[in-house]
Image 1: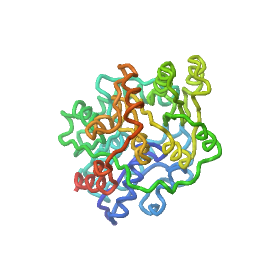
Image 2: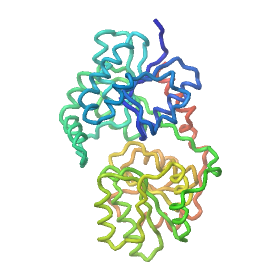
Image 3: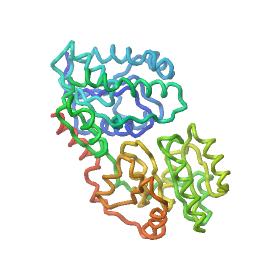
Image 4: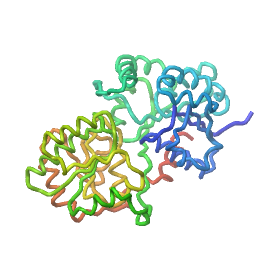
Length: 388
């Protein structure tokens, strides 16, 4: 029977921060020639291009079952059972499992009753917030899952996470949350910052689409905010900032990139605040257009609440573009340690943001050498040092 040094598990891959982290991990493990497998329920077409050349390391159900599980209702209904059966085939093929997220970790913990030899390393990007917070979701399925986790996750954690060797988190805030929740259950805690490549040459990006090209013909200072239009990303705060700025008679405009449940609400708010013409809803755009937006924008905004880490401040840094980051974001403490970007307390006025925009943004520079711990190679080496 073929054995593997390591088996990775994650429910399904689609576009997202955690998913990009996993895709990078897979790519780096291939480069390091680690004998591993990645087991998942399905991979969204949008992320497949990040896994080109890694196909032989990926295990998933048959094509028919995978297509069935892409239907949200059926995935919530049958996904855990299918994943349990899939993982059960591999519990004797490695002594180490790196499990991303609580669902596969719970399943692996149950499977340890059938094989106590393997060890589970729990990589969690989204620790439950101390005190508990219910986020406003319009998605019916998300509401149900959040309600169940809110009331029962502590119970299941106390039973199932006792089988976990150690827990790995991606930022300082999650480390504090993890120790708060799991100090009586899990003995070892590790902080491994997520991989972000800041050293690539992005001067060779392709020209933007005609829509983006025409937009940047306007001579003004653009602020951009990127992400799903939901309560967690807190896009409304960016609209409020622009309203505050315009009342100070300063010339800025706002680009909102992304779609979501609050889009109509935000558009109505823009009209209510008389900001029409100063706020541009660009919807979901291509990666190349997004790169051009980062490159041409004056400052990126990241006002997320209850958010682990946060990618957009680092995506913006690739082009030398600064960010205003909420103190609530997981990456805030890291950026504060590096003395880079502006960290904004959401309870404070916007005067500090205006001061940053008017003074620090104009000649913004940063030292890439300060971010060595975010290099994908460094990330993988540290991750493997935790496991082996």
